[in-house]
Length: 472
Image (tube, rainbow, N blue to C red):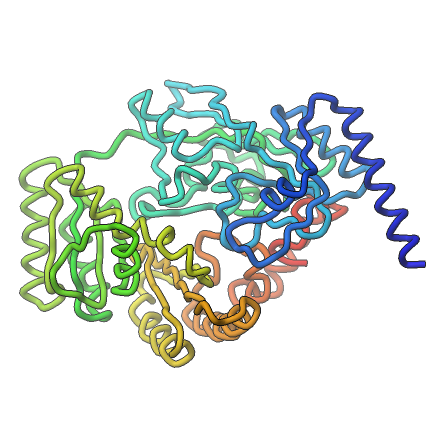
């Protein structure tokens, strides 16, 4: 009986796909095994991809038609951008239709008066940077995956990156959105307005919702002036306790754009991946910071900060960039970490606490990881200037994937308890997805979660938009 029911369901699904093809003859649909695997997963690689098919629309109208079709046939949708996520937010493992936005990748409009750029969701962040630069402006959100991540994905997770200290997260730079709802309606959210006090700001609900409230099909991005000339400085730091004191010294005297840190283990892997060694001696921690250096006074202030930190024993050594090439080389030591770790199948935690809580949290977290991961290579790095840390546990080659993940999940549960005590979040900028669902209650109380469920039900009564993500 079960087999017959399954056969009937499969036949109905095939028929539904045929109906979509007839209704939208120009819509590109993929169903080859290699395509299902490629588009059905993100960087987590924990789940076996098993989507129904892949749709690659080119217009808002095609997206609306897909949504109406999915609603009529009760077929779930998983939106897909660059699939660089680390939380399983773009995984399709249960017969969903993947809607890939890679063909919706154009700049639609530039408004010089409003200083906005309207784009489709599949455009890469790096392409947005180039488009803004053509008009003498910048879109300031930035991170290492800029060449492969998409604006739609950035919006879905409220991505942050390396310059949050100065510019904030993605949501600060979204002037308006167009959203296709689960029933195929097209909503225009905020319309690019600077001031709009006409009720709930649904745009902000959609940002960070991981595709669970609908499909973003256009985004109007705010642009701003390029920053003044800057320099990059790298510090070698002897003790973890000194990290935030170095930050305080830099923030007091310098106009910071970024303040990032990484450990000696992170440096080890980046050097093995081709970067150049910055110092003769190895230190346990490193800081790379970028700051305004448009005049001699600002450059002198940077030297004085270094001398102060050196005299106070907060740093062992330092280097100040003297050219764009040297600045890029110093940034590579931080931005090359994720790529250098990828072959080791790292288990990742992306966490945050208030900046004021960082020192106490680091102490407790360090003790926990040392105790619980004595046999693993654990690599830390992150945006410590905004309280965001990335923890990467590297899988030993001889350990089975399932056993490795099980051990890491046990420690993540302990880590989530530490975060709760310090008022932190289990997800700073990568979303909840599938990976972090068990720990959502450490960040949100039961009343908040129930309100979130209620919002989701209003937008998507049938539960078809990226089901299983955030919560079940």
